[in-house]
Length: 79
Image 1 (cartoon, one colour):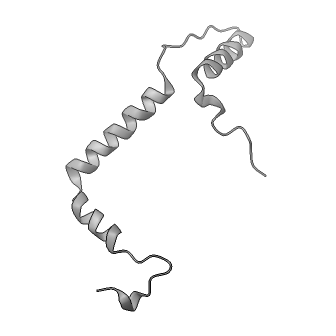
Image 2 (cartoon, rainbow, N blue to C red; image 1 turned 45 degrees about the vertical axis):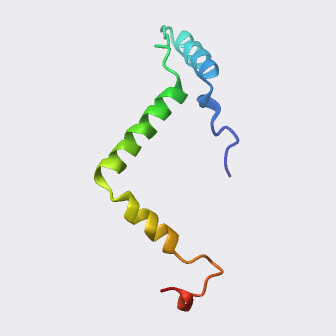
């Protein structure tokens, strides 16, 4: 079994409304700080990319990827 709700909470407006409603039902108050999930995700990916650039030899990784055999490549054909 799986779920069809994947990504449901990615929509900021829906997530904010849902959390506010849940809080209200529990007698609490919840307000969003206004941060966009998309903005948070982009910032996290940029941070990860910066770490890759700072600590990995991306040129070497690119060469390995270019060298890697494809499913239709015979390994004997490789240098």
